[in-house]
Image (cartoon, rainbow, N blue to C red; front, top):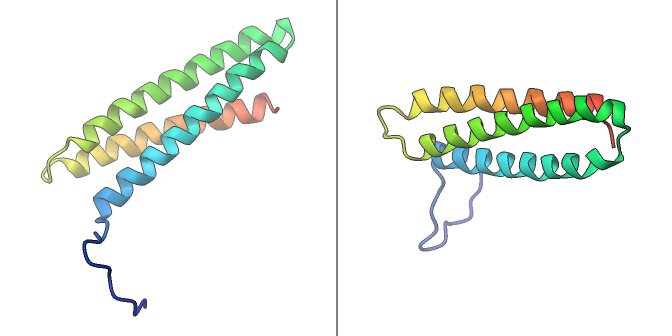
Length: 108
């Protein structure tokens, strides 16, 4: 256990705020990786480029859905936050799956 006193004015993050902060960080990391995938598209041979672009579009759509869910989660009330967290977890899982597919199929 940490015996250090909490500094005056410091705020202890609640589970809700911690979860939201973690999800925002993860979404931003995925966004950055997606941009790196996009940059790599030019390096792929023409016959693979169509497949790459299709998977990249699926990844972007999953990310857009995840961000939409994230903003809903941030605006949720105490009574419906758990419901929005469930939707966020599902959307995050879909982004992760799309991300892993890109990583597996198109290593850089």
